Image (tube, rainbow, N blue to C red; front, side, top):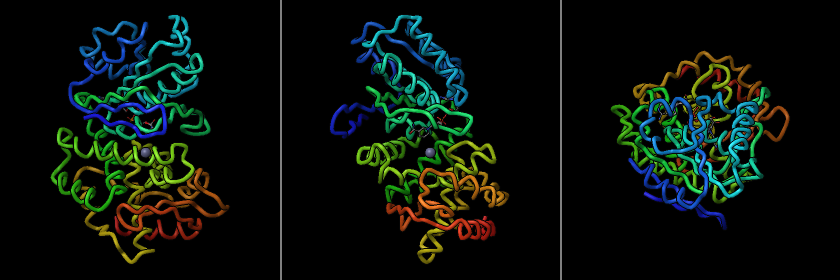
Length: 347
Ligand code: NAD
Ligand code: ZN
């Protein structure tokens, strides 16, 4: 399956299928003098046989540990040592963290070289689309970065074979979010298809829907001035829980979505059947206990520094009017804290 982005210029193709890596890569690499491969070291160890004909491989610390200024500068120095030229190609292979860091490196080396992202996690159906690059600072996650589009995204789903369950559940959190943003039919079908457990080999259809939903939002609002904010559904409380309980990102997003729907129910007359949703989420493997155990004062403290906030003592929060209709509301910190405490009773 191929998607084409719909920006006004600089469009690129997103390829999604099993077993497409080498054949699709070749279409691009044959056009360049030199190609440099930045690969998550853990992914390299697990899938070495896929990379045997790559010439210049730079293995990088796995996952999030790559996203530091020191580690990304070390890769830039290595590229410069190897005499990278402005018209060479960088191929970044790994999950969302390797993608963010590798794209950042590509965007600033020689003021920008071409790059292709090869995502290897389920969560990367989200992170690989949208052209945001990022590294972390001690002050917080993703605080330094650029907007920089890849020349292609090659999503070979064969990589999923080695994903541990916690990574599948984390990536599935964003799949759920995209289905809720797409509308009632999408989320109902998703729940119906997965109610007996997550089988990663049967999720292709929903990964494609997720990519389409994300592509829609980023093509209408690349720089997050407006509609792209809705992709933050579940992320306000989610980021606070992620930080406080050291959760996987998509797991925290699922918990954050429960918080959003709880507020939606308070505002709009119980439109969501939260009880069924909660039992479905528990059944497929999500641990919802952080929602019961969280210190709500601490959560409010984290949420108060969120980029979406416009007024002091109010928090910008994405809720759903119904599936497919997100809204940004402002809620006072005291009301939000009271609601989150009240919500503990239904977990
Ligand atoms: P990740 O890259 O940290 O991967 C998670 C773990 O899975 C790592 O330990 C990695 O080594 C391992 N892994 C990767 N592929 C594997 C495979 N095929 N088999 C076995 N193990 C594998 O993270 P992620 O969950 O893919 O993405 C999270 C990151 O994405 C965060 O840094 C987040 O900030 C970023 N993100 C970016 C955007 C964006 O728009 N740029 C959007 C969402 C998330
Ligand atoms: Zn997210």
